[in-house]
Image (cartoon, rainbow, N blue to C red; front, side, top):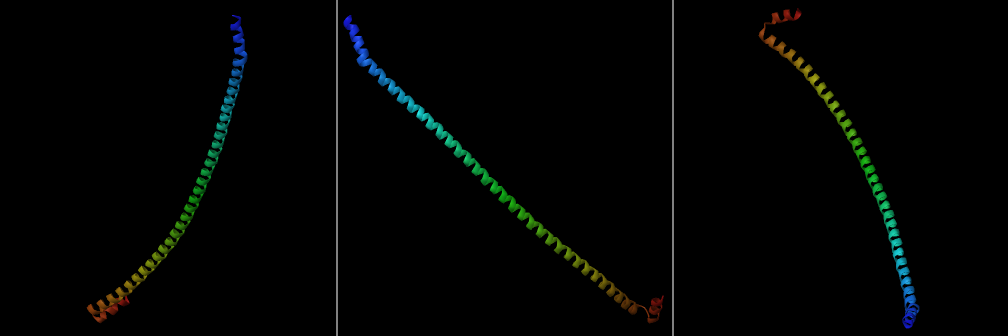
Length: 137
């Protein structure tokens, strides 16, 4: 039995303690590597988040620039359309004035021609003395 106790003590000193030390060191290294990996993952996630924020900001800036450019183009288009409308309205106004003037001249011409024509018809139909008496009244 003494031999068994000496054997257990020798086992504890020669095998168990060095084995426990090696296992503890191995566990510490493994835990350290896991912690280091967790730190690297956290850093990568933070970096990814920063890149995503930058990307979001860049997209927003591009969208704002695009919207600004579209508003500018629309404003320029509306200005040109207003300019063309105004010029067209002016041309229509001038054309209406010309048509009205032409119609007035045509009415005057028709009136003059109709008076001359009625005078000729009266001269042709009525005797010369009757015509002069009617005109005198």
